[in-house]
Image (cartoon, rainbow, N blue to C red; front, side):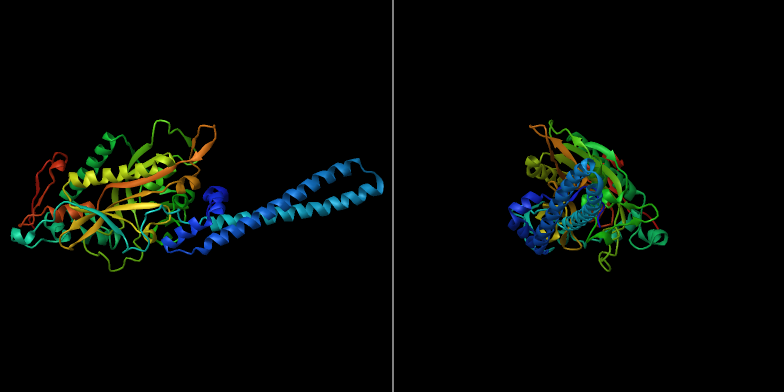
Length: 434
């Protein structure tokens, strides 16, 4: 049973599901998930409503019976008291049946992924659609040398140490050292500065969160094995500051009259990388701990699609700023994750792999997270409605992989992208002796 952040009625738009179940079935099909869940929810909803009606009827009878008992005398009163006691038991049973139906519906509702937006590709991980490619790939053959992979370059310039990282933390841990540490700080600081200039509020976020916050953002469930959990404290380590940023306004009614509320979070991130055995075992591409600058936006649902494109634009500007060739892909429904209604990834070109690899991701989560975390805004009639939430990566440790490979020189030294030079204080990361 998921944590009871909200009742079933908020977790999904049940009225919309009743009115247009085919839309939800279609979304489940695009995700590659069971469309039969729609019928299970509708059936559970019917049972819940019937149980509620039975409870309310018996409660009304009990109330009326109480009035009759108060006025009765003698044997009639004894008979009414006995009947009242029997009815009280029926009321209690009806309440229990209603609670059970509520719990069943709540559990089923939490199994739904977000309703996918029209236009998102169907299929799985390999069924993305390329939106555009930006920048030119270096022709190393023309330059007369074979490019080195980032793990070799990193050792040559003293940027990181995976051997000692494994000694201390195990596989997929590392130390960023010397110019590597300086490069990450430069990259992430540059990202924060650009976000602040664009109107984002900078935040250093918690990296341990309560279960209801983790659940509310959609990071538990089928991907639970990717998350680090501390049972002694009942806390989760976050894999992105998106979780803490989403939880920032949990349970609140926020003012969006001035437009979207935008935050940028800098945090350490932790991922177990379960199921990735044998994948990207060298270097620092796929690791258990890294740093990231994340954008997060709360906005009116009517503005969410436009805001999504704005976040994607910020990501592309950052990639262009540091000179990385990249492409944008429209992620297929089966690879979205439960919270996203639409997602775009930016993938940078990795020369030694001869392919693009993910550097950023931006998701429009519509009202999926705000429903679970009870985040609303006031509307014209004085009521409230759930807000939309969106997120997007602005820079992360993984970018070092692409920066090293795309800016290397024949001797193994690496040119610092010009926008990062003032932050680092050097133009080139030289090869170190020994």
